Image 1 (cartoon, one colour):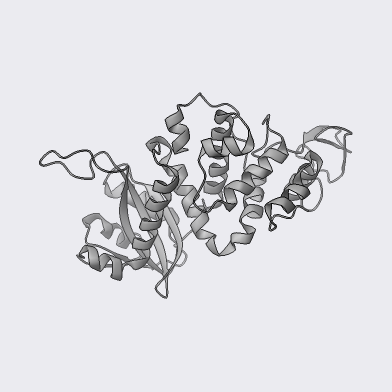
Image 2: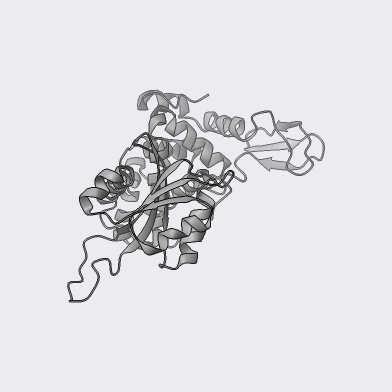
Length: 312
């Protein structure tokens, strides 16, 4: 078993070989022993010098890394594990360029690796639902506005993001952040509905007086909505204000020129870290498990600019 809660030297000593990493993938993928994906038989044997298990019944071979995030990757598993360790232990996130330099790999490979790991992060929180007292607001990402024309909104050209945070005795709990492509009521309804506990219904929401927030009532929840100044937002909705502040600092500190095309994956990474901030020692272990259990992702990505790598 790899010592994921250890220091970097101890981690490198424990996970430096391909065989050790492969055994960890096997144990995570089949915790109760090998099960053939073709015939469901529960017995098989490892083929020597290969990454495959052969079923003792149907004789078909199954790659240990098949149907994981590591499938079809040309990078060694030891490089993957080290990358995941670095990603998990970099509290502010890590860019693709810095990851490429740290691992000594091609920048495009680092970009694809980081994209896959973020996809695993998003998948782990896919079924997360909020309950209890929930603060709701919108945030706008996209850097300082360059539009100073009269009559133009300062939010013009920015990405609108829905932010929902559980407020647990005035302390921020789990958070959900998702892009809102428009201000249509149905769009907001579709964004809120799967992310809020509905069995039983009747969660309690707090928001500012933005008109279309009343959609939460149509979903069977309670809503306390009122006009608030900026100062009041920071006190009456302290949890959501704190999350938005940390998210923007996270973006500014790591993704100096973040690409709007990938902003949802950045949000997924932020939420994954936030929702597990009290499990820091287990973050690398949990992230490797997430990568093992995530379905295979495309192995190819187009070449990208250095600006996009800085943002990734």
